[in-house]
Image (cartoon, rainbow, N blue to C red; front, side, top):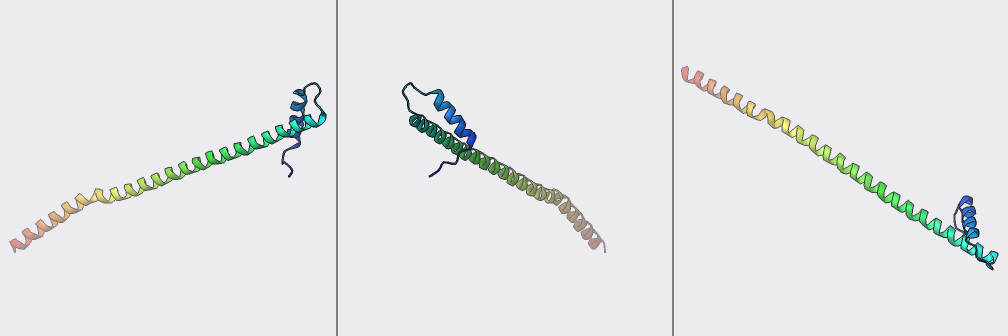
Length: 107
């Protein structure tokens, strides 16, 4: 199973491993240390990617919630505008009824 790391990461890991090399340490041991560093970098990148996806998912969910709230408020405004005219309509109807009653009684 081959790790999927870039050549830059491999070179950097080898450089770090050589910088930490102890006296009497073989090239094979240094190579194993470099591979360990590569695995650590790969794991970090994997965890970082998961964290970024999670943050992005939360951000999108927040945006959706705000859109839903704004849609609900628009619907409330539409309902309120209909109710705004209700008292005037009822007042007009009562006046029409009153005038019709007076005219009917006068005849």
